[in-house]
Length: 215
Image (cartoon, rainbow, N blue to C red):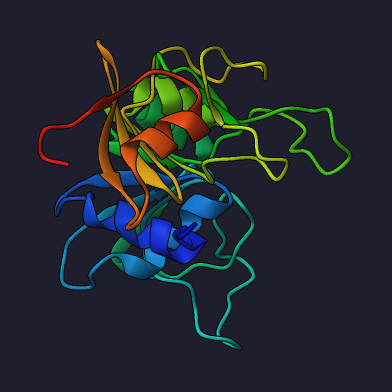
């Protein structure tokens, strides 16, 4: 079965970020979206540790150890970018000033509940960090993730078994197989990878899916 690479998922998310948007890219997979944002568009990237106006990753050898994102990755700052206290950064997040946040996830429920943290593994992030603030504060929440776990279980579920980050907060899900919108009527499939049938996607996902007319 054909699947999108992580880089291709990131490129697909980038296509849905409009000019003028204020956007937070979560730790991990979402940071890859930076590489695919057109340089000619004014898109303002926010990081919860106190940055606004981030640019693409620095070239090898040009990293500034004092300039990092929330995931401790080296970043660049575009002209006009700014630094500020992380309390001010969280005020931006909680105050509804971000248009979009892009988060990874362990699970998303068919109702748009988000679970993207846990403490049960040795390498797990030890706390939820700013994800709860982003999930409830951003105007739209995009989730990008693989459609299935390594053992083949769907990450899109009827009810999350991991601790919840936010309830009913997810707007759109991007996976290596499909793009799905969370609507009051349930999950609506907007796009699928070439060669995948709607019936097969529904079988893999294991929860009710609606077929968008324009699919």
